[in-house]
Length: 474
Image 1: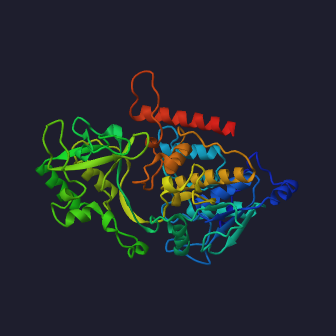
Image 2: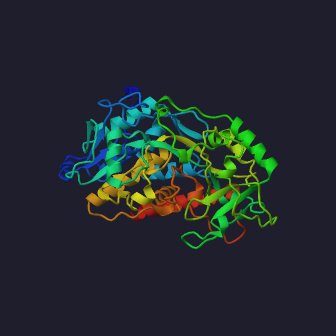
Image 3: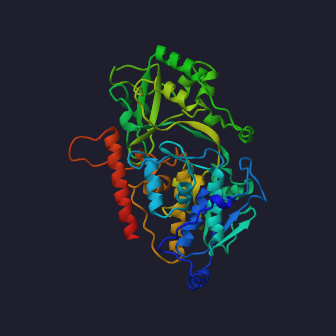
């Protein structure tokens, strides 16, 4: 808990003022059960009670601990204390901050109240931040906090459930979700390939072609962007890849084995100089139209979102440190000036294949009682997790009140995240994602094409204007 000097009195949304008469009326509603007291679960609870719908928030700590948490406080920050950039004019995560503030976010309110100096970023005193979130929920008359593990699929009498258990979902609950969905994408090292902004790829060097010109489901024979390497370029790339600085697994990750199908690219390269040429960088079935010849090796990028603004580097999951990744991957012809929407990684995680398993209201298709929120839905980062909690709380409370929930437009940061995890991303290559401008439709321009900071600024202004319009309409 936060000390008295750090406690923060939360302003209440105009939609909710806890007078006794309203509390009594709202308490007659069946509660929403929220499993998980992290950022997403706490935000979902707050949004629900702001609408006048009671919640029971289930948190297994301290009855059952995790390998990463150090306290029993709700909303504990287990890694960094930073919520990243707070620049709402030019940065997508800053836009997300601004939208969440406008939507009455508990998490952003507590972060603002307990921030510490961090330049242009929003960073917090992690202990007082978590204590303030817990205090606000404990003090609310429509919130009941129950400590103990929800180890199985929630019982049938829980008719509205938000599962917000994060990347460290307990093994028994993970098993229950697996049995319910029939999926096998839980609790393993997720293999994150770097994602590149399409407009930063040099297509005077790269070209679009599917291997052997084979058409995909949509009939497209040019589904991939291909970056060619000659033998000297390939050898230099392999040398730098194998020698690059790598991150170490955390202690609690070390016993989770790799899948052979998602080995780090540097591990594959270390097995032999030609390994990648017979794996993800094989050149067969591809002809370079710029030269009319065959490359020694080819790095392929595949479209990663419905808008076609993002492409992932196929088979390039890696444990290289971020600086090393940027340097190594910009050695690839056509990617010299690549801008990365996300760099690669491999770490233990628990997440759903959300584009396949969840509907547009974050409900599990196999059991519509269950909504999912936070990192388990395939968003990456504190703010993104809380953002999906915000939406899940609003969706569940609207459903309880028999109201219609209209999703925010995809031109907003919240709407873009929601669309990405519920259908905008390719289910075949789905991996956790931070908010970035590549998830939003490009800005319309009547004149010259906007680039760089001008493009980002136009998208930020549009996002906040459209978000204000959505809030007014809802």
